Structure formats: C-alpha cells, structure tokens
Amino acid sequence: MRDLPALLAHADVDEAVFALRPDYRVLLVAVEGIEPGPSDAGTEELLQRAEASARQSLADRPVEDLPHVAAWREAYRAFGAKPQRTRNSLEALMRRAGDGLPRVNRLTDVYNAMSVVHQVPFGGEDLDRYTGPPRLVRATGQESFDTRSGGEPVVEHPEVGEVVWCDDAGVTCRRWNWRQARRTQLTDDTTAALFVLDALAPLTDDALGAAADDLVGHLRRLGPDVRVARRLLGRP
Image (tube, rainbow, N blue to C red):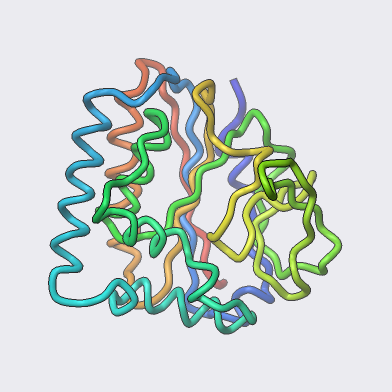
C-alpha cells in the first residue's frame, strides 16, 4: 500500500507554467485498490450519458466555442502549439462524442465520460508505471517521450518551451493535455492510477471539485478497497 497523500505532496507545477497562464489550476486524484476489468454495462451507461451531454452542448455552437475548450486553445497558442493540429484532450473527446466515444476498459471509460460531462481535460496515468512525483514544467527539449509512429515504438522529444507533465523517467504527457506516453498509459490491468484534472478560467474551483467528486464516486464502485487522495495546486 503506497502513501498517496505523500505522493501528491511532492507534486509540483513550475512557476514558468503559471507565468504562461496565471489562472491555471490542477486537481490531482490518486487512487489505489481498483479492480481492473473490461468495459461493462455500468461504463456503457456512463459513456452514453456523456455522448448525450456532448450533443446537447454542441447543439447550437461548434466545439471550439465552448468556453473551456476556447481557453485551452488560447493556452496552446501561448506556448507555440497549433490547436487546429494538436487538440487538447477535452476537445478531442467532444469531437468524437457525436459518432461515439471509445470503449477501452472500465477505468478509461469512467474518466473519459467524466471529462465530457464536466467539460474538463482529464489525464490518467498508471501509478505502478510511474517513477517519482508528477511535475508540470516547460520542456528543455531534452526530455524523452515514448510513443508510437507508424505502428512502431519510438522515443521523441518535446519542443523547447512546450508544457509537459513528467516524472523522474521522462515525459508522461505532451502539450499539457494532448498526448500520453505509452509507458504510463492505463491498461486492463491497472490497479492504481493518477488522474490529472486541468482547469483554466472561466472554469471555477467549485466546478473542478464537482468533476473530481463525480470521478471519485464512480471509481469507488470499481472495488471494495478503493483508496483515494486528492490535491489542488494553483499559483501561490
């Protein structure tokens, strides 16, 4: 049994990130004791609820006009990314919801559904594959990022100044909340996870907390011994 509060106590957001977006906050949720499994009837219901929520939100406007999506597009431009080419995770899911969200496994299905319902970018990392505490920094360009290209595993490097999540072994997510490393991705065998809930104005702390509450409520159904710790980080 790991010390989840201690892990989160050492998490850090570099001042250079806050200088880029002073309104940025992140709510980290660490979970242990999950009973892994494939998608099931419960997660199917959640995903259908999320798809209906997305259709309602997009009934009278394009996805890029949703307030939190628009805020993240601005944040991407601030560090040199092109949001039309590299979409934040929330926008990517909202665009897929009309044709159906992916069905992956119980754990991934839950956090994808929560991301869409609450319109918050969520990240999910396998804690057993994690090394050290999570940190959000602006990249030097030397960090390693393991991914796939043409179906083959490759190691890439982020651009200088790119906002990346990392641990002691390398980058775990590029461009704030765009693409996750293969090393720490959630799988059908994941029993401990770290969830990253990213927020910019106009999203409030109350709305961010409600998204985390909803997530935790569903995660507690994934096993009788689920343990949870959470921590909100913002500019001091």
